[in-house]
Each structure stands twice: as C-alpha cells, then as structure tokens.
Image: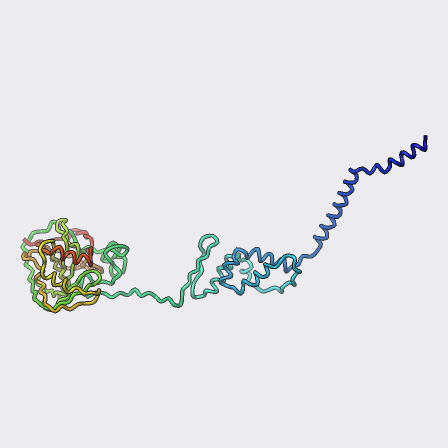
Length: 385
C-alpha cells in the first residue's frame, strides 16, 4: 500500500506547474527584459547633430516658405538638413558659430522681418501687420517722383489759381481754405464773395463811367471757365479811381443772387487800377433773346484747354452791359482761390438776356462752376436809386 502511495505522489508532482504559474513566470521574464531594454535606450548617447536639425526644422517650418523668396541661398541648407530621414547615420557636430545674442532670442517671424529688411535696404521697408502678417513696402528704381506743379491761368483773374482745386468733390469749395496756405482767406475771410444781395441801402450813387471800345481779343478755356482777354484801352471810373479792364469770364449758374434769386449765368468783368486794387463788374444773364457778343465769343472757343485763340474780328465789351446802368455795390473778394479780399463789387441791377442755345453751349463745357453763397457778415450794401 505504501508503494502505491509513493507512485501516486510521483505522478502528481509535475502537475503542480499549473497554467497560472506559467503565466506569472512569463510576465516576470518580460518585465525584466523591458527594464533592461529601457536602461539601454536611456544610457545610449543621442546624435547631437540630428537633434539640432530637428529643432531647427520645427522652429523654422512656419516661415520657411516666405523666407525662401527673400534669401533662397540661406534657406536651402536648412531645408536640406530638415528633410533628412531619422534613420540616417548621425552627422558630425558642426563647430559653434558666433552670433549676436539678439538673434538667439528671435522668433521666426522677427527673423524673417529682419532678413527682408536687409535684402530691401534703402529700396523699401517691412512693417508688421496683424498676427503673422508682414507688409513689404518696396520702391522701384523706375518710379519717378510725381510733380504737383500746375500751370496757373492768366493773372489778375478771379478764375486764376493752380489746377488742384475744383468746384466739387474732394477739392471743392468746402476745403479750398485747407488746400494751400495761400488759400486760407477762402475759409477764414470775413469779406468773401459771392453773397445774396438783400436789404441794400438806396442812395444816389455816382454812375459808373464805362470807357469801353472795340478792339482785339482772345479766348481761352482755363479749365474752370471760358475767359476772354481784351486789348488795353478799356476801363471804368468809379469813386474817383480808374480801373483798367483785364478780362471777363462766365459762371453757371450765377454766383450773385438778388433777394434769393439765382440767374442762369453771369459774366464778371475784372478790372485793376494802377495800385493793384481790384474792381469787378458783374452782369446777370437770364434766358431770353440771343446775345450777339456772347455768340462772337462762342464762335472762337478753343479746341484745347489753356491755349488762347486770337480772334480776327474786334469785340466791344460794352455790348455786355444792360441799358439800365444802376448797380449794387459792396466790398468782397475774388470768388476763386486764393479768395483775395478788398475787391470792389459792382453788380448791375438789370439782367441781360442770352438764348437757351447759348446757355447750352457753355453748359456742355461747364455745367456748374459757381462758388456757393458766402455770409454777408453785416457788410454794407448800397444800391442806385
């Protein structure tokens, strides 16, 4: 019986190595192998050159595309190094390069801005915009400076001024006084023209003595109006002074108003005395019969602006005047820049008629060339009885 028990124990002994024990033993072996492998990886030295290349690749990737256009030769080595596969043999470390401390602290966008500035030099500038945005301002050698010099029209005219002002838009009458320092009177003057003539004091005014006679003339399109330059010898006498006629020109609609009424057109006859003082005779033009002198002027209109056309036939400025020579008078200014004040205005009370066709001819050139009404500012206005 004892021998049978011994045999049974011998057979059951190997059965103590159950599957559970085998799994535990295998796990222990794998854990030991993993620990040993981790120690080997941690102790194994990393290639310094490859680590540096990866850092440069990740830092310069956002700006590499833009920087390549400005410095293609400098970008190529970095891209080539960054594209090397991780399984290449380690490269020998490069010798350290001396660099200013500021460059070590630069982020990629700052470095790109600096390098673009070095490439452009005096030919441009680089400005920062929104986040991640650079603005390159470049100047080509082929660009020429723009000249803003303009040819002035004939002197002694209230239509004479450089050609950068206008009757509308960004350079219209509202901003004349700010366009140039010489035009400041257009904004701050206290005796500006034209005005709405109201409440004139009726007096026995001395008649204006018109000494007009037929003579040669020329017509010029100034870019602001049609102007007629007349020969010497025409003049007026008023208040004991003699003023020589320089030229006359037209506005549509009329710049002057009488008790709020505005007319189709007006003509300004500009005079100057020996001391340089100005006197302007204004004649209001309303729709009606044709005006012979006006038709003579239209027949000699120039084909190009700023080129005077000398007419063959003589012209008598007296034909522009109404039969009734009574007038309004006040002190004002020229009605175009530089808006010079101290001008004696003589506005004829009776209008002169012009035909619809004559009005249309001028309107095709200048549909509107009238300065807005200015403040009377308490000025005295006289009128003939």
